[in-house]
Image (cartoon, rainbow, N blue to C red):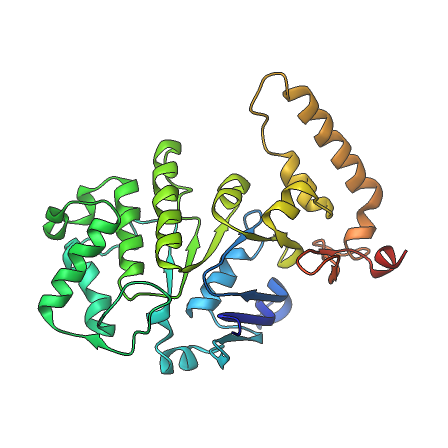
Length: 332
């Protein structure tokens, strides 16, 4: 079985213009030669600071941005452009959960109307779950109504939600509704872009728990985009670390947390606060040691004199673990 979704050598550049004639003087490399493979039923995390390009990758996958170069394929079929995505009805199989649930829900529509919209566009599948064929879909109004009630039950909201409006719900409840809408079309992949960063910690835990349960129950692939390493560690099996539009390290969750190789990964891990008072001193010493290594060995991890810092190409360490370093370092 081939990969569900494959990204090859993806580049997204934005032109910087200046001068009287508004000429292009440089490019912002939001995504700079990225490759990523997503397999069916597995969970992946994209981690990086704000502006690293991780959200841009998610938008490329669902068709909200156009690629400058590179390709995106879904089950072996090219879906790089918006036209190709539309021809394959990719939005039926690939859905996105955004950070701001309030702005992603139409305030003029009831929750019932919001959940009905994708079902009216793509039909109601016979069975729920990414493993089931969705060749037979129904547009029967009664089945749409039944599916809406089923979706609300899945995300733990009462049936009366159907007649209510988005403003009547808390942030956590709205995010549950957004997840329910994403599940409506029986997708194979859900891209979750900072899905809990705007929520309180207690509400974050509730939303993450039910999202994880949904992933396990229905076998949906997830791509979690976040700057929070704790969230990504809890939710994903595989992680890619991004810095200035480049992957600097990719691997399984255990490899990234237990055996980090790139200096940027080490800096991110060192920034996680200690859970105990006794551990604060050790954590502080770890951060100092990592910063010293960064200052002394920067050229090992980033191209010389690059501004902003541009990471080297990935070098494979194992079948699942790769890091961005000078190739001669690996050979030695």
